[in-house]
Each structure stands twice: as C-alpha cells, then as structure tokens.
Length: 187
Image 1 (cartoon, rainbow, N blue to C red):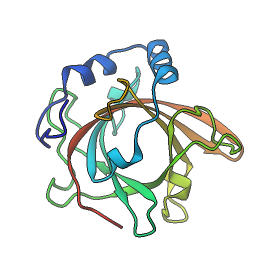
Image 2 (spheres, rainbow, N blue to C red):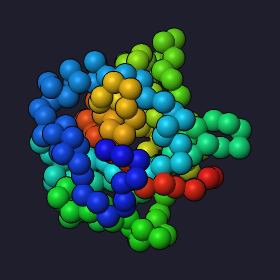
Image 3 (cartoon, rainbow, N blue to C red):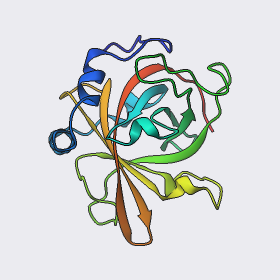
Image 4 (tube, rainbow, N blue to C red):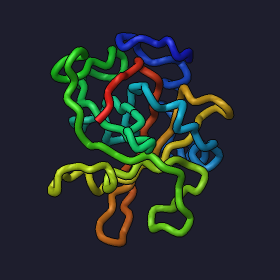
C-alpha cells in the first residue's frame, strides 16, 4: 500500500489477509516481524482493526492511531474513535474526520530488554503508561508491541496489546494497522 492512501479508502487486500488470520498465525507473524521505523510512523494516522473472535462484538473493533514527534524529539501517539460500521466500510473518525477526538496517548520506543515490558524485543513498544494520560485513565495500563508485516515496509503493521495489572501483563489481543492519512497533530 502506498503512503498516498486516503482517509476514506477501505482496507487493502494485505490488510484484509492479515485480519483473516487465526491467532496462531498472527503470533507467528508477530514473532517473525521486523522493527518498524519510528520515523516512518511520525506524521501519519493509521486505520486499525482489533482481531480475534470477540473483536466484532466490542465497541472498538475499528480505531485510528496517530503518531507525532514531540518538541523533545520523542515519538508519541494517540488513538481516535471511529464509527463502528464494520471493516468493509471506510474508517470515519468521531466526532468527525475534520475534528477527531484524540485520547489514549502513548510513548513510542524500542523495547528495553531490562524493562518489565519486554515480551517482543524486536518490536516497537507503544507504552500508554508513559503517554501523559489523565491519572485515572484506563488506557494507562495498555502496552502494545508493533512489528512490520513485510520486511523493510512500514505501511502495514501487526500489533499485540497487553494490559498491565501491577507486575502482571495480560494479553488483550492482536490488531493490524495500515496507513490512513497524513497528520499534523502535535501535543
């Protein structure tokens, strides 16, 4: 998929192929994936789909993630809620594509082998606990690991979410991301 994808486009065939994989195949793909370039994520929004048997019955099967570089030089990201009308329809931000609501901020970093969040050393870690979210924000417990689906290409990514409960990390499921549109948002 090219970096010129539009906000209204439905997913690519590669996105749909990954979304149709079973849990064991997704884990294998995650383990074999490459580390994405954080620089290639910056300045883009990505359409995302949570995967797995219960995902279609949740209020967040579809979502958007965005990435930006803070004034400090660090890479951060955010989530945008979208209309939940199934993966065969375009991703439409809420309340609108022109004025989306951003929440669930996270810091993007390489995985530190010495940290508690080190399940996939070859992935990028999206750490919501370091995203400067409000004190009681439930998203603060999320930890996402993200890898490239295709070697050398940053247009399609596979992720696996965990939820931090004290020292425990509970798997929350897989998701797939694909470039959606450029973003100029900076927090």
